[in-house]
Length: 137
Image (cartoon, rainbow, N blue to C red):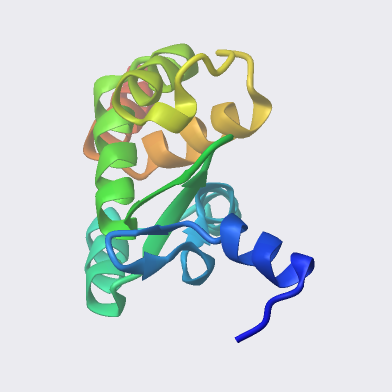
């Protein structure tokens, strides 16, 4: 078998974790964009679909790619949304629990928008909305 330099380089760039090819996984930024576009969704349904379809989420880093199930990623987002009173708290929670978000600025506009969407689709967010609506009466 003969290999030229370019084929060898391509083989070195492929990162396989847990028997999954990272090219088959969705990137976390794509998943975030998908949630922001939906605005209204049910975490339970999204997690169930992700489990059924066995979707993986890739977190590309400088030297490797971390892959987790989309269901686990959505669970982390839901936990972060429920436990956070502000976008800064949300981003800090993600930074403490998912390495890709470590050191992320609390002023990141995409994550702030993601917080708004995630929070509005969690129990705590819905309770906040009810409280706000009842405050006017």
